[in-house]
Length: 171
Image: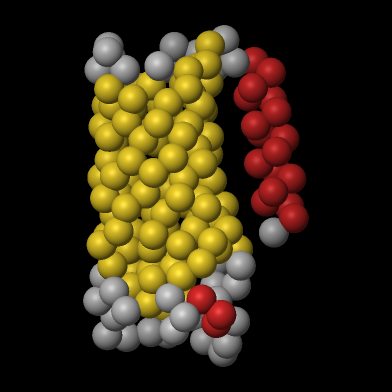
């Protein structure tokens, strides 16, 4: 885990040092999340996420976008709240349209009593998605979040997964 955090810090420092332009923004949306692993029969949880972002332009076609999001995740009867930090690499395939991928760190910020004490305080994973930004700064995106960490404090495996659809504004 320390190697992942160190690698992310080095990449961010190098990216920000070379960034030509930066834009700040806000975003929010709906997500459907659930658990994978040694669990069965969980119904997905419909929740929301909201937060802020900074978009660093490295070149015309490549940007890096760190975000800080408050996110309600988990399953229908076992909700978990996280402060999630995705760091998305964005490649623009045409004006306004980007493909996105990057690592995510998450810190548990609460949840239902049925589960919150039985899971680890930190999660990490990978985000994959696409986004479209209008010239006005209004943006739309869709993302799949794949949890890579076993968040269970007990025996067995428990991982977060989710699909997000949202909109935001970059100024």
